[in-house]
Amino acid sequence: TKTCKKNDASVKEMEAAGVAHVARMFGIPLIAVKAITDIVDGDKTTHDEFMENLAAAAKALQDAVPKVIAFVAGKKIEDL
Image 1 (tube, rainbow, N blue to C red):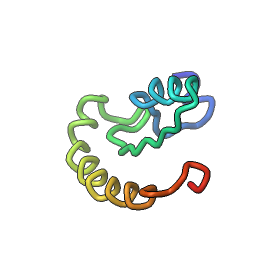
Image 2: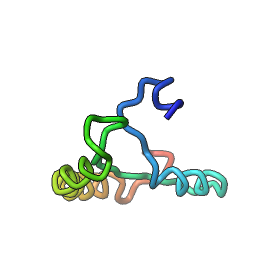
Image 3: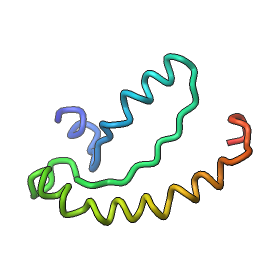
């Protein structure tokens, strides 16, 4: 896309962007933990790259999410 090329982006966030926008509108704090499954305008089709990287992304999230929960547990928003 134009924005990705203009900003020399390697990845793009789509799924949590809408959730983050609405959370901000309502003043609700949000933490999104994401894993990358496809690269912007890579050599492979989005579907092929997604399927190739899905297991590794799921494993990365499996490892990362408990750490994020442990980090934020019991803390006030202003302490994060």
